[in-house]
Length: 213
Ligand code: C5P
Figure 1 (cartoon, rainbow, N blue to C red):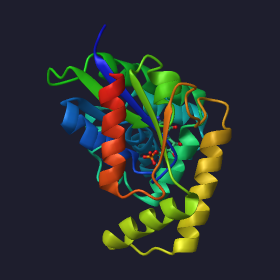
Figure 2: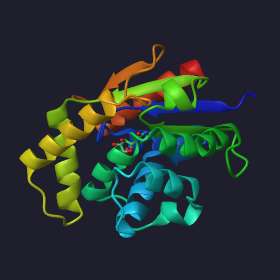
Figure 3: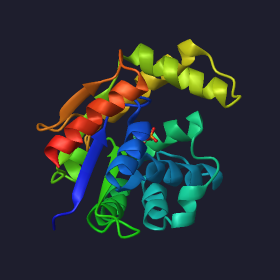
């Protein structure tokens, strides 16, 4: 297959989602936020009174995930993000979501010629064949500042120090787990956005994709 696949990985609140959506528009590609899959599994589990550490329940939820589940209004909250990080460490959950992600990448919807996927293991596990692999990162303080602003902007209560602490705990769990840990692929281009505004980060990412794909 010769479809264009762009992989975007990195820690929480590094700006992956914004970059993925803008690159998709720029290159006319389909876009999949793979974190929403893990968030949907976690949200369903929490809503059913389940425990995000319950491997069998998590695997069953992942296997039965429907497209409507990805539209749930409760996916973006911090509690769901935390629970998503817990369910995403369960190998059976990751396995159940792998086929969907690969299928999206290789057979993108709406007749698109390719896809942008963002997550933690796209360049390393889901699409090692991606033509461009971006590892988007920023300092923990900068990422926490952005997430804090985003929460306040949505009218949610937020304390910066707490956001920083929770985010570092989540990143550490995502990086230390055995199953598909967060790390740059050997052939990834690392884009540190700590000192970049959104426009400059986008232009750098666009140039990498244009050069590599
Ligand atoms: O990116 P987002 O914050 O929505 O992801 C929520 C959680 O889902 C992450 O903390 C991570 O544990 C998990 N995740 C993952 N692999 C992906 C995408 C997300 O393990 N490809």
